[in-house]
Length: 359
Image (cartoon, rainbow, N blue to C red; front, side, top):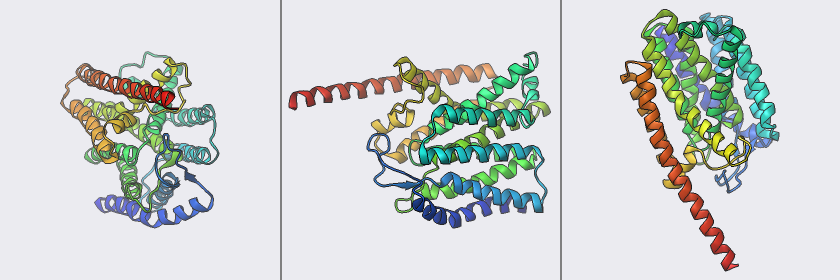
């Protein structure tokens, strides 16, 4: 069985090195590229948006190999694959012609409902948490909302090289470790497949000459797989009552920062009278980039915060303890972000005044 695990990871990684160069040429031919705009997108040239497509191709090849050779997956994984493909296609179309955010939301809700209705994640999650008293319709609705919210949270974190890729890397490293320890083969295979593909993607994402981006398709479908696998693994641990608190807190911890940042940005935009999907430079990576103009250093800073929250999760002996300590950390982070956003706004006002008097 260990050979199967090594094969899955290695094959995913190696296939990325063969597929990405080919997909880069296709992207250039069909102009599936991200153009710089000197406002939010400050890369110097057009970058192919094929990270997500390449990863999906690799995962499909690896997973079909698993089905035919090892028969590792149940029928429930079809709904996961179906939802992932739909979100990838939606994101790729959006990368090409820009779909209205509300249309993308509709597709996300359909995919989230499909995975919940399939039973891959569902009612037993709430029963295990002691929330089985809620009406079934409410349980479904809350779960669908959470899945859609988490998908968008990861999508919005894709603002600088490597960041969202590293977040996925941390998440699937943890799911791989947990599923290996408790012998949950299907989730372990998925986690190792994604890990190999993500590592291959990061090599190109940080490359200067052969750079690629995930694109909306990549962040949407990887965000979907991430949150669904996390919930499924939490659900299995809660039902089996096997280190359920540690697993629940650990997998919750790795999702907190993207969700917190999305809620913070949405609230700020709405308060200013804008659409929650109005693009700006107020995400945590933008704030840190204004302070430390180095993408790699910003990656380290944000990953450190994620690992700190994860560390808190492993040390806490109750959900209340975890919520209290994490809330204090996020409150301090919020103060820091607000202070730096205020400084940037003051700088912009001063520049406008200077330009007015000069011209």
